[in-house]
Image (cartoon, rainbow over all chains, first blue to last red; front, side):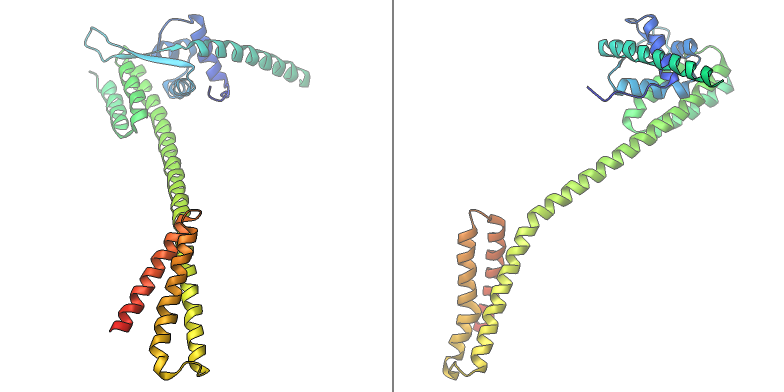
Length: 104
Length: 170
């Protein structure tokens, strides 16, 4: 397995969007709308997740004459990793909030 | 197609054409997705964002390829050094043997131990027979444990011997 990647807030958003419907295929634009991330932020994250074999991809041919669409879904490993990472991230985030509030 | 969308699509197509192979498939995914966005301005923003992402991805890919190229080059260089070093050492050994032999001959001639009538025989002995014999023996002894070193000694011995023989025959 590849090394564990750094979980940025944007990556957490993407993983969270995937976890809403864990086993269904998602389009790039749909994820972008769900997360509010622009394509310039979303695609590097998707590429990195695919490099780590956490996301699998496939092409979907369309009948309306439009070009095929690339679809994304979490792999079983990605699903496990996403859940674990988001859990850790949630803990980290809440402790950071506590620290920040303590400083204030 | 509206001009706004067209501009975005052209820019994205241009970057995709220049992108390395792996990044290109992601670029095609971005283009494919753009055609499913109804609003023209949203499509343009999508194309511009995708262009940035693709440039970044291409740059990383180029850097990765360059790093792999450097690693391969260094590994090939190390392999070549590993091959050539013993052969050159063998050549060095043969040259040292020849120099010692020639110095001995010069010393003998200077101290008048060699009769003038035997000068040619002494030259043949010290310039060809002894150094080449030693090189041959060393090469045979080292053939199994140090084949490359032995090849170097043998090659240099043969070259020096051939040169000396040509000199004496001429």
